[in-house]
Length: 67
Image (tube, rainbow, N blue to C red; front, side, top):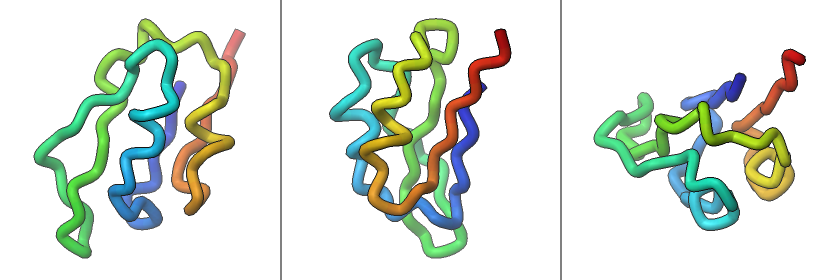
């Protein structure tokens, strides 16, 4: 499961750039600051590598391995 804290996200899209499975997509969803945030729309592709979590400069992402 991927958790995105939309209020911490600044819309840098680093998660999209580093995701090897292309889990994230640009969306029209905005946080309270009016920043467009990425959406993990392809979660079934996620390999739980945690690159998005590690690369996020604002610690807005958390990837949980529920296996």
